[in-house]
Length: 104
Image (tube, rainbow, N blue to C red):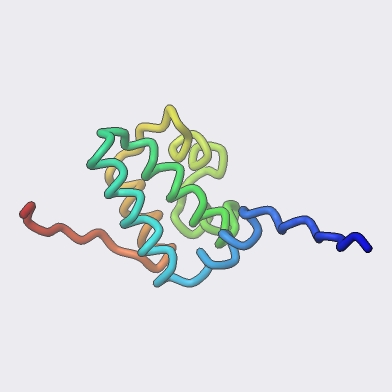
Protein backbone atom coordinates (compact mmCIF):
# COMPACT_ATOMS: atom_id res chain seq x y z
CA UNK A 1 0.00 0.00 0.00
CA UNK A 2 1.40 3.39 -1.06
CA UNK A 3 0.98 6.38 1.21
CA UNK A 4 -0.07 9.61 -0.49
CA UNK A 5 1.79 12.73 0.55
CA UNK A 6 -0.07 16.01 0.41
CA UNK A 7 1.79 18.84 -1.31
CA UNK A 8 3.18 21.46 1.05
CA UNK A 9 1.52 24.87 1.16
CA UNK A 10 3.42 27.51 -0.71
CA UNK A 11 5.77 29.20 1.76
CA UNK A 12 4.58 32.68 0.79
CA UNK A 13 1.09 32.08 2.14
CA UNK A 14 2.35 31.10 5.58
CA UNK A 15 5.03 33.80 5.54
CA UNK A 16 2.52 36.56 4.78
CA UNK A 17 0.19 35.24 7.47
CA UNK A 18 3.02 35.36 10.04
CA UNK A 19 4.13 38.85 8.93
CA UNK A 20 0.74 40.33 9.83
CA UNK A 21 1.99 40.21 13.44
CA UNK A 22 4.19 43.29 14.10
CA UNK A 23 6.53 41.26 16.35
CA UNK A 24 7.10 38.69 13.59
CA UNK A 25 7.52 41.46 11.02
CA UNK A 26 10.12 43.19 13.20
CA UNK A 27 12.10 39.97 13.64
CA UNK A 28 11.93 39.26 9.90
CA UNK A 29 13.16 42.76 9.02
CA UNK A 30 15.93 42.63 11.63
CA UNK A 31 17.09 39.30 10.19
CA UNK A 32 17.13 40.87 6.74
CA UNK A 33 19.24 43.75 8.08
CA UNK A 34 21.77 41.23 9.39
CA UNK A 35 21.95 39.83 5.85
CA UNK A 36 22.42 43.37 4.51
CA UNK A 37 25.33 43.96 6.88
CA UNK A 38 26.99 40.68 5.90
CA UNK A 39 26.42 41.02 2.17
CA UNK A 40 26.37 44.81 1.74
CA UNK A 41 23.13 44.53 -0.26
CA UNK A 42 20.30 46.86 0.83
CA UNK A 43 17.91 45.17 -1.61
CA UNK A 44 17.56 42.26 0.83
CA UNK A 45 15.95 44.64 3.33
CA UNK A 46 13.76 46.26 0.69
CA UNK A 47 12.44 42.89 -0.49
CA UNK A 48 11.75 41.86 3.12
CA UNK A 49 9.91 45.14 3.69
CA UNK A 50 7.90 44.44 0.55
CA UNK A 51 6.86 41.08 2.05
CA UNK A 52 5.67 42.85 5.20
CA UNK A 53 3.74 45.41 3.17
CA UNK A 54 2.15 42.61 1.11
CA UNK A 55 1.07 40.90 4.31
CA UNK A 56 -0.78 44.04 5.38
CA UNK A 57 -2.13 44.77 1.88
CA UNK A 58 -0.01 46.84 -0.51
CA UNK A 59 -2.81 49.20 -1.62
CA UNK A 60 -3.96 49.83 1.95
CA UNK A 61 -0.42 50.41 3.23
CA UNK A 62 0.45 52.68 0.31
CA UNK A 63 -2.61 54.81 1.02
CA UNK A 64 -1.90 55.05 4.74
CA UNK A 65 1.76 55.91 4.12
CA UNK A 66 0.69 58.54 1.56
CA UNK A 67 2.58 56.74 -1.21
CA UNK A 68 1.45 55.86 -4.71
CA UNK A 69 1.03 52.07 -4.90
CA UNK A 70 3.13 51.81 -8.07
CA UNK A 71 5.83 54.00 -6.54
CA UNK A 72 5.84 51.79 -3.47
CA UNK A 73 6.33 48.68 -5.62
CA UNK A 74 9.29 50.40 -7.36
CA UNK A 75 10.70 51.62 -4.06
CA UNK A 76 10.65 48.08 -2.63
CA UNK A 77 12.05 46.38 -5.72
CA UNK A 78 15.55 45.04 -6.33
CA UNK A 79 16.40 48.34 -8.05
CA UNK A 80 14.60 50.44 -5.44
CA UNK A 81 16.25 53.48 -3.88
CA UNK A 82 13.72 54.89 -1.41
CA UNK A 83 14.01 58.20 0.35
CA UNK A 84 14.38 58.03 4.11
CA UNK A 85 11.08 59.84 4.63
CA UNK A 86 9.24 57.26 2.53
CA UNK A 87 10.76 54.41 4.53
CA UNK A 88 9.93 56.22 7.76
CA UNK A 89 6.26 56.62 6.75
CA UNK A 90 6.02 53.06 5.52
CA UNK A 91 7.46 51.57 8.70
CA UNK A 92 5.27 53.83 10.82
CA UNK A 93 2.08 52.64 9.13
CA UNK A 94 3.23 49.04 9.39
CA UNK A 95 3.41 49.50 13.16
CA UNK A 96 7.22 49.43 13.18
CA UNK A 97 10.02 51.88 13.96
CA UNK A 98 13.70 52.38 13.28
CA UNK A 99 16.18 51.57 16.02
CA UNK A 100 19.87 52.29 15.99
CA UNK A 101 22.48 50.69 18.22
CA UNK A 102 26.24 50.85 18.50
CA UNK A 103 28.36 48.34 16.60
CA UNK A 104 30.09 45.95 18.92
